[in-house]
Length: 430
Picture 1 (tube, rainbow, N blue to C red):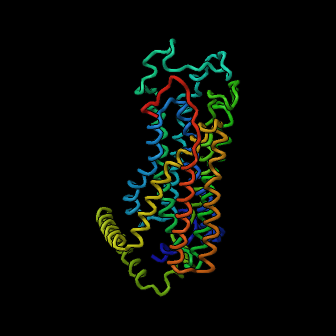
Picture 2 (cartoon, rainbow, N blue to C red; picture 1 turned 60 degrees about the horizontal axis):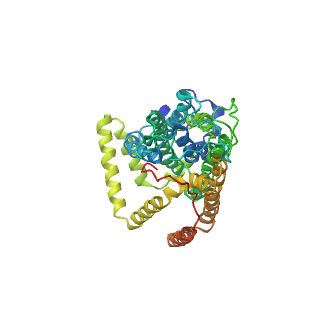
Picture 3 (tube, one colour; picture 1 turned 120 degrees about the horizontal axis):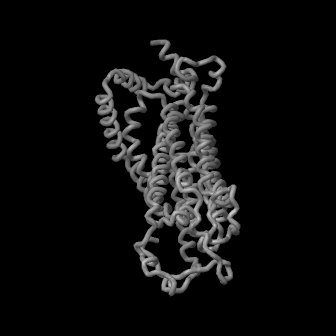
């Protein structure tokens, strides 16, 4: 029993726990590995958003289906929560994070599969005409256009398989992200002294925000190359027929996740010094730990039911806490208000300002990622040094939200004329 308990504090896999590896059994190294893994995990979502308009054009897919793809990673966490309830007490938290990130790795590979199946697109390579752009533009209502081609319900049925691949990839990334954010942060909180928790979480969050910025940057870089990087299409990047290498970034993200996830398998179940320091003088935590060890001998079904009932009781207590309830409602409302903005901003700038998909991705990233990084770093230092009361922190959040709402209202007052083409109509699919 003592040998088994000793393994919980040693770095390694199975019985391989060499002495030279134990220097890495600290919260500092875990924070570095956790942040590096978060860079690539966070890059997937923004890369998906930045390349979605190119994906739509390549596979003639409607915006309705694109919106379904973007919510796939929100469906995954709902299903993953029940599995995590069963695994979190018995399994090693770093191993749970590692397995979850392997799902994100598979999701990134699945997102690149449409190119492996279909290859590069050639359906947009039409003949040149006498128009100023060198492209023969065809409008609905023209003499050489079949009326069925302008039907609002018409859609390329071959887009179903690429849609399924991308939906599955985003869904798997959502499953992996649940383990990363829920279990990974819990492990850090359990093994960091409370006096340094704000500093650790602030730097980890700021480092993790590099992921979305990296996603926009890699999207801008990949979309500047043709879909087949080895075959020059003879088109300018500003040509409407240009299809960038949307699939390359998914492979880069997959390789980054795979490399960064390997150290997660070697972290111990507990980090001895900080874990024991946090539990000093806490009789309630020791009692909870004793109960968890006693439950370890129960069958999986009974153990799951006990954990599920405990989770329901905890949710009931949280639902009676007005601060937690209003904070949750505020986060949900903010997400509903800003989700469409964050998803559609690259596509909007691409079409509204006649930018290439590459430049639109480059402009879309730094606009709100940089402010998040600055806020996380300054906020963590402020909480660590000043240690303000909860009322002051809540007042600061309200002030920032008011300023953000005022800025969004100001954006709504700006009117930009849209490019109008004759003989076209707004399809119900768009």
